[in-house]
Image (cartoon, rainbow, N blue to C red):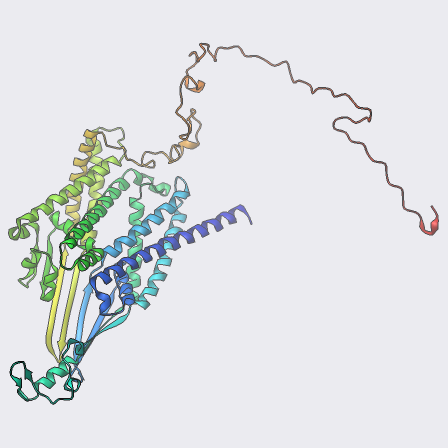
Length: 552
């Protein structure tokens, strides 16, 4: 085996182990969060927890499910349940994305100062292929049916009530006979109705959505992982894109943590704390990241009807109760609840925090504070113009449900809520530029500008060598970072010619001493055996073997 083949085998093994670790840990964590959230919500009481968990994980990674159902009443099959669901449990999505990104970014650190482009593509491809394989297994497992038996409601048939005839017994009045022409029997028949609500995962759409999801996660990881190497052609991103992207990612994750803390506080004073915690585990990022564009004045459009109105917070439920499509803005919500303006204040502080972090992670360079603030504002504006539309798309909600019995509509509910992507892009650029400039000026005033810049952004490798070419050029002596700092009195290379050393003399002006020549090795006396160093006695030759027939 040659050295090249050995390196290729080691790289292939590393790629496989990285893909297995990233994908397996992500799916295990997502399944755990989904199962715990469903259990706290009490969903496992109506159906099997395993298929529901698989369906939630598929939805979290961009998949699609198809709910369906039927109702059998009076012995006839004449009902249909039609449901549409377009909502992703972002609590599960965020868990998987963070784990995949963390493992993938750490695997790149062993590639040196710059990761080759082919190796980067191979690593990303291995993770994506294994991810789709496991997602394909979940599409097969995420199908089930939940059956609700009306007899469990306590309204049994006459046969189940001791064999009595069709009669109606009112407490205090007794049995008044066949009231209404057998109406109790019909009510009992309706009570025996069975509603079957099933769901199945759409394999093709789910695999396509999963591919888009995993590629987006890997791309965001490359843009936000400041301490992971990049290809040489992308090395400018260390100083431009990565500080802003990592800062924006940090504040968005921090906002989700604040939302979970608020949910935990609300659960302690609620009558159903398990439901509050379950909903927070599955959908805390949905609510928080929906409020960020709204607080930054991105207008939303929404409608709501039926029982889904009860799921909306106040005053959003009051605004959407009219039934027609409404424009949801901070100003309209503030007319119903003035404290809504605090949402805009919190979002502005969130963007300012991102601006300060961007300035702290961006190298100062040679320009002044104004030029530095302009660079930070430019790149945070670019990051905001990309991130805010992604939040609008990720938090879009579209849920519709209708249940009809014998052609008569019995239950109806619907909810649609989403924002404008072009407006979000424009406002994200404006807010990012303003927050970047203000945060950079504040960081310059406090001395925090550039202090948290990564070694790659400063042009230095993590081991202390100049990145990427100057480490291999001849230059002055530079001590290793692992040793103590160089001192002029102990390092003659740091003293100019003519400077005095520690003893007061000039080592550069001292006369050069020449050697008289090589010293011959000492003579060793010979012993009586005649042995001398480097020689050995040769043993005498062996006697020849006797000739055949006894003759010599």
